[in-house]
Image (cartoon, rainbow, N blue to C red):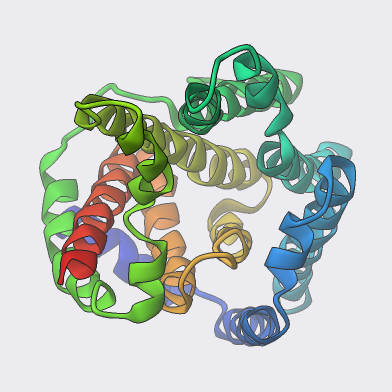
Amino acid sequence: MKLILGFLREYVRELNIKAWLLVSLLMAGLIYFNYTAGMESTIMGKDTLPRLAGFFCLYLFVFGSAWLLQWLFNKNAVHPPLFFYVLLLAGPLLFAIKVSADDISRMLTAGLSMPWNEYGYRALNWPVKCLLVLLLVTLVWRAGRYEGPVAGMQLKGFDVKPYFLLLLFMVPLIALAGTQADFQHTYPKVQRIAFIDEYTTAAWPWKLLYELSYGIDFLTIEFFFRGFLVLAFARYAGKEAILPMAAFYCCIHFGKPLFECITSYFGGMILGVVVYHTRSIWGGLIVHLGIAWLMEIAGFIGNVK
C-alpha cells in the first residue's frame, strides 16, 4: 500500500496543474451537458452505424482535447511520430466498436426460444465484446512492435495485498452511493434479467452466470484503458498518457449515475498511475471488479429497503 501511495504522490508532484485544471473543466462541462441534455442516451438510442459514428466523435473529441491541452502547457513537448496519431484514432474507434457491437451476440442467440434468446444475448454480450477488444488491441499492439505482454497482461511479480486494501477504502464510498436514487435505479445490473423468474424455478444459477459475465466486462475495461491507453501511449509521452486516458474513461460513464461518473475520472487517474508503474493491469482489475460486485450488493440492499 505504501508503494501505491508513493506512486500517487510522485504523480501529483509532477502533474501539469494548468493542463489538469483545463481538462477537468472540460469534463465538468461535458458532464453537465450530458446529464441535462441526455447526450449519451441519444447516441445509444441510434442504430449500429450512427451509434458507432456518434461515440467515435465523442471519444475522439475528449481524448484528443485532453492530449492537446497537455501539449499546450508542456514546454518540452516534441512532435510525436506517425504511429502516435494512429493510436490516437484507434483508441476512440476501437471502443466505439465495442459499445456498438451488440449485433454479434444477437446473431449468436437468435435461434434460442424466448426468454433464453434474450437472456443469452445479455449474458453473452460482455464476453463477446471482450474477445473482440482483445483481438483488436492485440493487432494494434503487434503493429506498433511493442515488447512484453500485450497491454499490461503481466503476472510476474504481482502482489495482490495492496489492491485488496485499496478496495477496502472504497467500501464507505460505495455505501454512500448506494443510498442515492439514481444508483438504486441502475444497480444491481442483475435486475435486467428478472424476466427469467417466470420461466424457471431456480433462477439463481442463471443470475450467478450473468454476474460472472458482467465481471468479464471489467477485464475489457482494464485491458483497454489502463493496459492499452496508458502503456501504449507511455512510449511517446510517459506519465502524460494518464490524464487523457482518465478523461476518456470518464466519458464512457456518461450513462451511469452522476456520482459514479464524477468519481470515475479520479479513479481512472489512480488506476492509471498504478499500471504505469507496475506495467500490469491485474491490480486495477481486482479493485475495479471488486467495486463492481460491491456495487451490485449495495444496489440489491438499497432496493430491498
